[in-house]
Image (tube, rainbow, N blue to C red; front, side, top):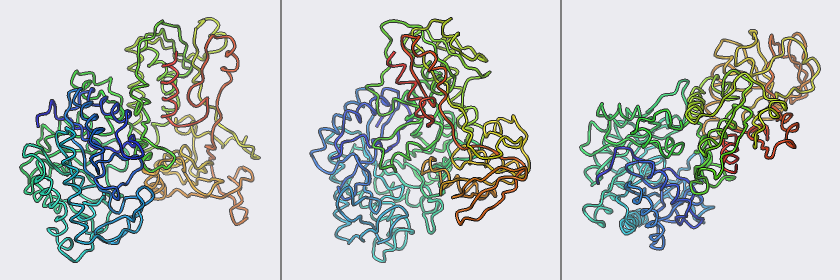
Length: 626
């Protein structure tokens, strides 16, 4: 297979298929956009080879010939844009869901995962049937026109369950030593190669290591697995990682690109076939990995969700125009949420909506006033500028960013700063007139006489009605993060959501003794499922006291007086009390001007306090309408 470059889009489940597993127009548009963006090879997401192996709602299927026409249309959409197309063949094993397929999950051993059901142990005969399912699926992939297939042997799914001693407790020829545990993968590779044309590439994805898993697969074992796979006909090795402590699943205090590149480098030392490296690899890191010979191909996943045009921008030297992934893990959280069907991106409102969210020049250029330089306002100004409108942006602070400025300050949040820089750069390139340090008023609107106003005026901090809050040692979380106030040694943070707990971690790192209080029973419920356990763990490691189920009584010079869940009155001694109890939309200016301008819109947190994704989504949608 010859590729136009070494960038690979790795398989990422999107849930953009139909409920029955068919390719949809949404799927085609999504993949076509990434192919058009310049990627060399697209590996279509995990596609189940057998209905009992389905692990996600709306997961693509290749378990029957009836799926071939739709898959063929997907291949054609990718090929039309100049990229090669492969497909990942998948079986969820114990991570499959009976609610989706009506069957008890299967696995090498009756060992449930932390997030799955108790599986049924596969018989040797049943193992053979699943091997045939993979081979049948590869034939369908070839018929559909794919350029190759990837066998999914990583991330805790069925093949990986055989490979890992943590989940494989068998005592027959499929369990025990590594050769036996790898037998299932090797049989699949051989069966696939026997069924397809000799020039049809087949390779596998494996874990370079399992992190935080007792008796998990080690790097040394993965090297041996890679060699066995190579000898069984795998023409490449795609090296990933898994486990609750995997570097790809958590953030670090300072952004680290290519967090598991060392695994690919080690495996490359022991195989002759090309190695695909993956794991939050930036283009800069990818060039380094190639130059140093640690891998042959670079898989960029979330970066292509954030910006499908990343390859073209990189190759043309437009580095500053690449929309940065902020490693929020929201796309992964969406896969775990029953309330969401189809992954979303915090910084790319057009993800999964590539057709309807295309940006076209407006028929008529209009004068647009954007009030507020946070993510909603900047995105509205960016898209409106791309559409050819005359845009003026007013921001009362001395720099753009809005609440993103505070969001970059706590530990593990430095990855947001590139988003601010990207949006600032885009506005400058588009010629948006930016007025900093100027608070827009009704008089400003009257003077400018815009045809459209986008109010992105954000929020005001909420102040609860608790006796004693007017005392001098009570401050707002935002002022603490920005260094506008002095904070004593003992601190109580009132409010246990994201802002409160991030402020608590920020202060704990400065040596403060911090207690976080909350009326509810759990902390940071609005933090996504992927990062929440790590966040809570960090708070406890840094000595932060988390106090839930309390009632606030009063603030005194000594500290905060509360009633605990067992109805005991308690004084939490504090030199400083930090308020992080929420916010309310700031719509004051909107109410003043909405009848005086032909079109007026609300965007971002002044609609209601939400996430970055919602703010950027508001700005994008509104600018498309104007």
